[in-house]
Amino acid sequence: MGRATEVLEGLATTTAWQENLYRFLHARPELSSQEVETGAEIARRLESFGYVVQRVGGGVVGVLTTGEGPTVLARADIDALPVTEQTGLPYASTATTVDPSGATVGLMHACGHDVHITCLLGAAELLAARPGAWHGTFVALFQPAEETAAGARAMVDDGLTSKVPRPDVAFGQHVLNHAAGVLGTRAGPVLSAGDSIRVTVFGKGSHGSMPHLGVDPVVLAASIVLRLQTIVSREVRPGEFAVVTVGSSVAGSKSNIIPDRAVLLVNLRTYDMGVRQQVVDAVERIVRAECEAAGSPEPPTFEYYDQFPLTDNDPEVTAAVTAAFRAHFGDDRVVDLGRITASEDFSRVPDAFGTPYTYWGVGGFPPERPGPPNHSPMFAPVIQPTLSAGTEAIVVATLAYLGKDEP
Image (tube, rainbow, N blue to C red; front, side, top):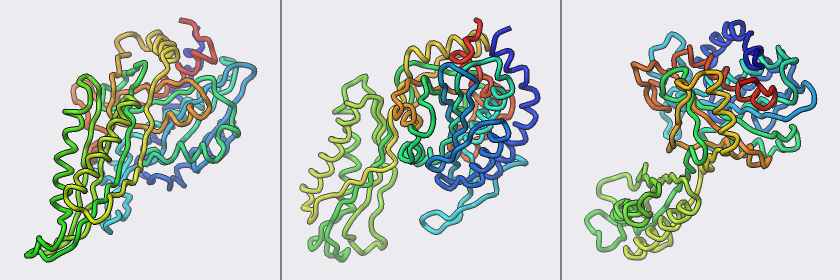
């Protein structure tokens, strides 16, 4: 009997409480850096499994050691989004928050972090229940504030690397709108780096009937938006990947007033750090040049925020995990994940330790009914086989290192 098979003998018992926990978490989402009740529930369950539990940087870490051997870290993110749920599920979220404009919006686990929590807790229990099946240390890390790119950094800044054993390998997984029960792996860059920039350009206010007495930042902003589109089409080498999006352009409040400034929110996605720097430099160059051309009275300002690192899977770790997945699930349930242009801050945790890692996807929707994308108000993975596949994946990957599972 393989070690993973031995540990997974308890899956049916674990599944019984996992499904209830998933519904509980889905109905009670908490925003980034506000995961108080979620963290308390995670800590309570880890302690009941026998883990040594710490609160680090707003997150929760459980450590379990069964003897000499490697250390494996598995991470789940735990925050939700300001999205009003439209799934119609009996356990749909009814929680709300007030956005910066003062409007009331719903809260929702629209990115599947409730799945991630439930799967990692299930794997943590299964491993704790079979200590004789593996040797080493298992670290279950539950990270806050992934959606704002702040959580991994907060844990590292709070001394994570000195508070838990250094892992030899680290794992992350994400539920996606792929077929439920199917796993996707890939070596190398898999999730893009992401940068958001708040660009403020300055004009000179005037009456709408007297444009010659002002400098119009609305026209200036429009010129910048159009010019930024040429970065990818005319500056990035064909075959290289880059996305430049202007998601917001705000200026003025009345039709007959020329305002004194405009604010653009720009988002960048890249897979190569050299290309990233090229795009960043191009954005700043174009904005400054358009401001000069318009006669702007002040230089523009650039505020960088929500910056996500590249997720670059280690080839050797990915190969070992993929082989373990194929041996356990079968070739038909393990596919090429491909490159995903979304971004994550997971890699900041293993990078802080200097640890190789791999990050995989797990499908959550019926094959005959492709799911909506993450962050959609309709994002609702089917409970099974999503939870069982995600739980088994963590156990199988972990025991590829701690159990030396038989092929």
